[in-house]
Length: 566
Ligand code: PEP
Ligand code: MG
Image 1 (cartoon, rainbow, N blue to C red):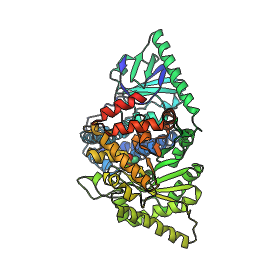
Image 2 (cartoon, rainbow, N blue to C red):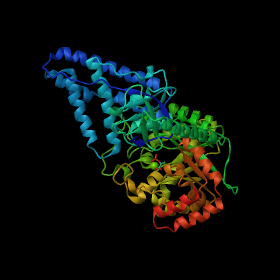
Image 3 (cartoon, helix red, strand yellow):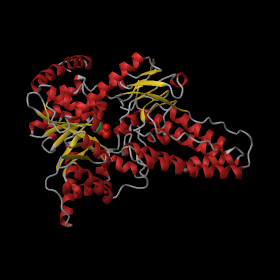
Image 4 (tube, rainbow, N blue to C red):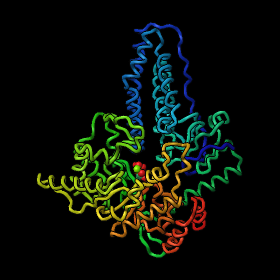
């Protein structure tokens, strides 16, 4: 039995498909530049065409958020600086392959040396692109996973984003890799595809061969090669149980989210693009609690998306929500979210810097395009507009007035705008939680962004692995901030939601129900499990639990209380 990192849920039992990548051996002899330049140019064009082809194929099974990886790959392959550096080495007499390997290895090492997980992941992207380029230079073929036509479990040293994107869910029962962590692309893609995967499983390549039988338990991170009959029987039973549970949850798709004692809450979804709406409907979400519009801006490579293209995206989402509320968050760029066509001035602490609503209020030209697109789309459904990173009441009032001014302008132009648009804000800066009752005089609703609220309350960068232990959603300090926010909203008759990861955390659900949270927004795949929890609890009992939790000292103590009821 081998152990790895569990990334998704589910169990796979099947035959091994061992993904063996070609070995790269570069030519270190002195070469004729003209000939090598031609080889390099041809290989580069083929690499770009290959990535475009993979992206097109992947479009059928992946959401836009994941597809954006391929745009990043295309950008890298077309990066003039990379090309200049390689060409310069070729002109010095190096072979095309040696030049490419030297330049890309330097870049990979540079990114890998950075602390930040985001940049470490970029190293994986450069590896993926440069490996393809090297294979094309050397005339080596990369195994084509799209040709798999029987049920297999893929075993690989590493799954690159392009490998994962080529998987056909019908035949790929799951995958296991030697390399990779919980936040690696491969892991994220596995969740998105809904297939079991175990990553970081050292020794798996060495211990199996093509055609062996393999068991993969993606919940426990367990891998068994050539299992005994008893093991096959045990895991077949576990797999069937898992599938039955999944099936049973489906019965909750059209059910309301009501506690045992009759208290109703809303379970809604977080989305990043109109394409995500399919899974929102499938999972029985009662609307959209957070539409992160920055992906629209990140996908665009040349310039800010124009009013019409934004209008189209918002219209599709509103129409597909079938009358349910759609909370659209205005542009939240800056911090870790950069745009290829917009230069941010360097700052010591970009997370505490010029970003989100701060940027939008400063650059009304950029903000106006989005606000107009939203207002125009408002007649196609039930729109709510939400501003990110609000810190002061004035910021909120300015942003809200800006929306209302634009509404009047559009009406003057003869454009129809809904009269029923809620305008609210994210509570992700502690200052807002503390002053929630005052904010609630102006905001129609709150949505608590716990990812940032926790990072700012604990002063712990959410991208840093070393301080990840301070991400403590159930720490009583955070619970008190949440309580202030909910009570603040209710004091003015407003509703309060939550759209950070905590909103879909099963351990948080009992306390949040007890604190009186009205709306829980989460990844669509979390909706049904959360509905199951909510319907099994009594609001009154959870109020008592929450009161005890607020008086605890540590997160551990709160977790103990929660585990007693779950
Ligand atoms: C949050 O901060 O909790 C949130 C939902 O926003 P994001 O994760 O996009 O910063
Ligand atoms: Mg945030």
